[in-house]
Length: 122
Image (cartoon, rainbow, N blue to C red; front, side, top):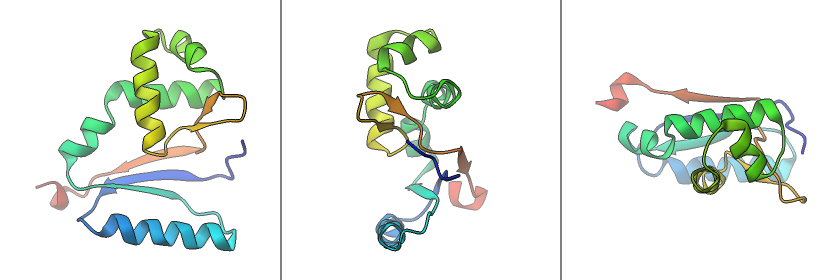
């Protein structure tokens, strides 16, 4: 799976922004122009409940090791398979991990940025 030098940008945004961003991403896909993947959360609490330190470390491990099975990822991360399986499913639902045809998982981004506008956190 080719990454095309894309990054995932995760930030806080008010309700409704999610739908506008999704429409923009769909339009970019139709035109074939690569665009960064954007993921919005309405609060810092929600963001960090979905992106726990363990899940962020899993993204890093997967990016460094390349596409692999969930079992191999758990072994590389030194974590319990069941917990890694749960975290992979959550990250896949967020669009931060993708499954390949060979049923391996990969991170389709070169970087993941988490942006917190302190004024928005309050």
